[in-house]
Length: 305
Image (cartoon, one colour):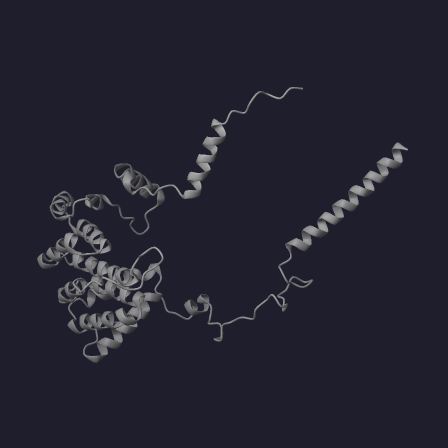
């Protein structure tokens, strides 16, 4: 009798295992898929909404592109505008190993007033239609380090700052953030110039600009571009708004810097300024509170056996 029961138990176990595997395989199949796991045309699936055909993959675009060949910025007159537009396009698609090619081309065009004006015109136009292009063009103009660009950059930084606009659910005004990020990039260009007028403009914006985006970048950019860091810190301490002194200590991660170099600097900064450490997420607070409650509860007497 015991042998029959054991045989029956084995058969029942095999049936249960086979059933479990069947359920598992069915559960792994994509919802609405057919037996082959391919795409479904069932009622719960919507057809693709895109009307335009798919573009070429990035690999094919890069394969047809000649590296280390930025457009020349030697043109004058109307040709300068076309050359600058092409250079911005090239810069937007460039690879990290081509950045030095771009810097050399911009440095060579430093004295070309027509190129500087063409960059300014591109920035003005893109500011209304293409924020990312305007940001890139401002970075390129700042990299030129041309004295002819100083007045444009100063005027750009002093554009009237919006007081109202479209608000996010967190209360952020989109128009303020958009202009603030562009003006911060213009500040970078002024600080890189290091002319007396440009330096004074940067220091003025340290305390006068209505946006913390621009004020903090003015502090960082001024300190970064001054050779005498201690003298720069003393100057900034005289200009910075009360309560914003910590921005003088903010750290910058340079291109190519490894985590083992950057992380200790970040830890030191957070230790010196614990007020900038973000609070724990709400769910983490609740978990800790529940854990504390569980530990404080009296479990009662042990069970009797």
